[in-house]
View 1 (cartoon, helix red, strand yellow):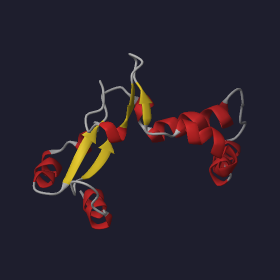
View 2: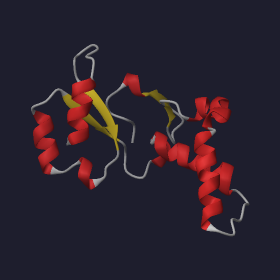
View 3: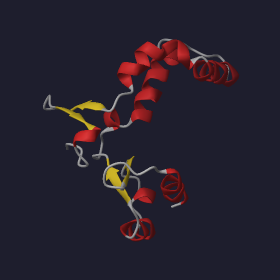
Length: 125
């Protein structure tokens, strides 16, 4: 709930004054305390469909990172793997062009329909 409160504190109302937060279906995002509290606030949670990591931007970033630092690479020691991970994150700007097309709010569903988050508050299932 602390995150939701911080979101509202820093949110600048646009059209309807409702802050929309894109989130997954984790139990802590759907708990009764949070949903009851949110019902009386100007915040709306837009839940990603179950089993849809392709719609979650952080999952896309983690996949990209795995491809860049793990693909066919063996690290003898954990420290080597950690160093490769930290280096990737520190130098992430070198992948700007690739990430710009990967980390977008334009989603293509299994049926081939393209949906942009601004078009709907209900993501396609």
